[in-house]
Length: 378
Image (tube, rainbow, N blue to C red; front, side):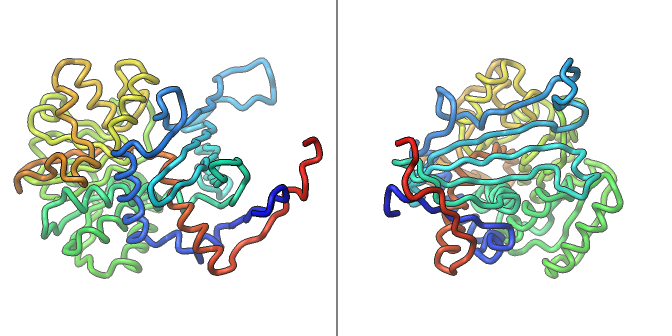
């Protein structure tokens, strides 16, 4: 940049696709580098603990102000998620989005997301980009990093709970890291979403010899090697998909992208517990006082609740970065059952955004926007 003049790039969704945002294999490689940075501490997120998921604006159920949004449905919020990520990325940025399930009645996705990338020193904007696909891909890629290191070789059967966007990207990551998959089970709530998901799978993944729509969590889990829980959920754990230990195949990996629940004793005594970044869950335990699980619907918050209850110790939770760096063991036996919690962090958005931004510049994509030649009040 030639300061004090500032220009920045705008990338719409079509630009992002051309820049490779849907490249799952590349995204998994990038997210592995992110996990390494997290493990080393080469990052900063929001809050005094530098590990906050973000700042959320929620609305009251009632208000004397007629124009104020109300909490009238599921997932009614706005979220700002700033982060710096080091390593090969070395960039500052923020994801910003609004979320409202009622959007679907308008033909819109539940959340509409944008990412802004900034110069880490001056704060100058570098790129404003459409981020629905970016966020979806990195959400699937983090499970892919885990399955790369945790799933038994030769795994043939996978399961998806929730045939929406997160279910699609979780499956893409499973296919990228588990090349022998040939049977897919899927559980959903409505025929329309299931039909759309199945059509997507048949078009994209011809390696699946069999696609089974199942009605129960038990059918989904039994005899399945790797499962993603990518269903929508609220704050009441009694409504989450519940998994009984007796259903789980020996050696299976259960990935918590969204909410599911397992019996405390089975989880603490019979499973290996893995998280994408332990410090994130400790931050959530501060932000959502015990019991954290429910207020935060990610299974890793149940792990920290188990620490609070004295059922496990902190060292019983394995950080994926430690496994990647070889500091702690990953899978130790073929029969070991692993529960892997995925929290989702803005560092991931900034990292994948950086790669797409660089590719967009290389290809001459996007619209250049002029901020100023010189700041007027400086």
